[in-house]
Image 1 (cartoon, rainbow, N blue to C red):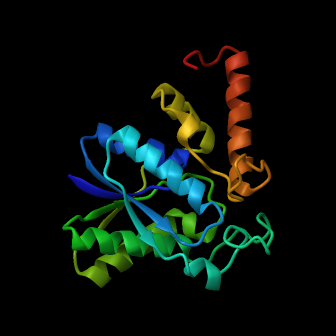
Image 2 (cartoon, rainbow, N blue to C red; image 1 turned 180 degrees about the horizontal axis):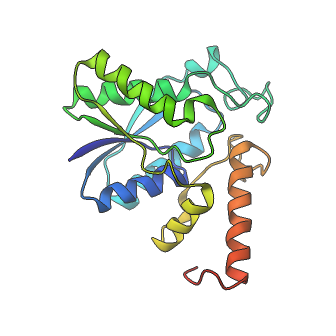
Image 3 (cartoon, rainbow, N blue to C red; image 1 turned 90 degrees about the horizontal axis):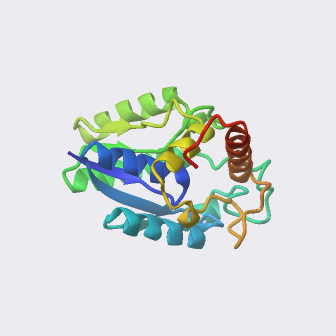
Length: 209
């Protein structure tokens, strides 16, 4: 079964792609350049993930979007934390991915949204409403998959380590620098999860790392 998998070069979509592969699904990874500050490093990681998983990468360039609809993740004139919300980002991603899927006779789109939503376009209610809208718009049974929705960032890291994934190829910082800023919302999530992993390992509660 085929699926268009939204892939960012980060750990969530990486783990999701592996999970989909293990279920025997034919994955069509899609990266979207929406004008994010971290575009170059995210895209480089996306290509590395695709190479590791032996997948054929596809990209969509809508970089002008980030120039007109700005946030702290598309403009360094705004605060990367306080202004992090980019209106309709995930709605845009799912619309583009489902359009691409439709054109290629694919009727499933996967997105790596996890639990504990920060923004309104990360909730299960949003995903269900969007799926219904896409089905009405396309007049086909377009299904949205979000297999990580009940997992938090710590769970994702646990899975990544169990799967022995090369985490040195991922990128997650919203700022887009050579090294993670350790301040943006994405970095905060990763730093917290890594600290939790370290404590669990020291306590002997995990032994596969």
